[in-house]
Image 1 (tube, rainbow, N blue to C red):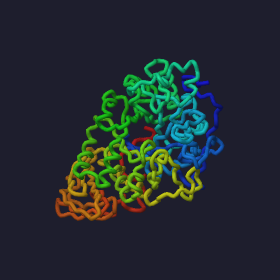
Image 2: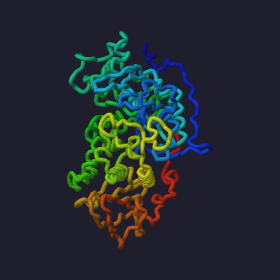
Image 3: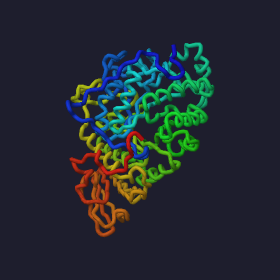
Image 4: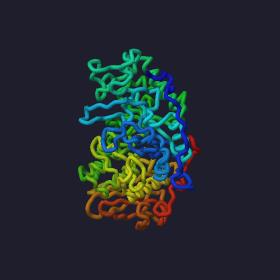
Length: 520
């Protein structure tokens, strides 16, 4: 039977015990909380594929099969929060934790379970394969103590295949199934899943109450909204009203509108239905330019076009996700180009989303390989124990995140083109409020490339440093001359090297920045 519409669980409570420290006596790793969501660094985790902290809840776990559960859970994520804080991420987005259908489907050509969390059987319960309500609350508490916000993925559009919702005579009328499914965005049954008639008051009340009650109990900081365009605007407007009333004005909503960019997301921003959306355009445009497809001036104009988002709302650029082939895979495993892609993402407008494991070289192939296990190398952490990882790449991510967080211009500043000839792209980001200015130069070509530009006024007459390499850059009066290595980049700032961000002993937690007390 379904749990009550209030979202109260019916499963026996499980006491959440504190996970052991990563090393005996080692202090927890913390990160300075972002001052606003515009300054956030999001880290997206498919919970089942990340870390198994409680083997006792493993069911349907066959780690060698692509469509089965692999054992990752809330307890495992709690144990590895230092991994995420150490990277510099300020927010975690985790896949849905609601109770999912118990069986599997075979349409993919292999048995495929609801390990991803999107095939709900009962919104009122946490799936015991992921943990318990208490463990979700403990995860949020532990994350907050480290300075990390927590976003939970929620689904309002559909239930799981053959779920209890389709069998219970009380809830069967809530759903469109089979021949009842329409052809438009609102009445289609996405991937043949039972489609909730959220236009019915009793359906809206059930799904809203379940998700909002869980957010309130756990102390969540926001939701990632699934399949946004398949639910009507009036529902999202009511959703916004209720989240603000029940969870606070600052409760953050970031939505998935398939194919979303500044223009196509605007109807949801115009209605103030969510705070941010995922920028589907960024991956293809960035990887295409790096691989030599299209002129540099066109990519430069694309980066400028991303500013057209409505004032007060945000676009989140990503390179990889659970629904598309990963960037490293699309680049044929070329890690030089992937580093440049990461550098462009972490110097772009909007809070970036890092997909778990791409920072250590998880290739993330075509579906379902884009949902492979988190690589843990020599660490005995299942399900990815023994899977190789690139620690040097992770260090590069840490440095890029630290640079971004030390320079408000990279989070908020407009894009100004300085050079876009041949294979060399040079642009300026500046933030008037802080007086910060950063010049980013990226060379996709096989030969070094040079460009000159007038130093931004914010730099004054002092020296110029490359925060990426730690080198000093030549300056003759107001003129700056820069040479960028083949398939390389520079991030230029005011200051004399060695820049704090470029030093090996730099601690990103100590970077100067505006912060607010936790929780916000």
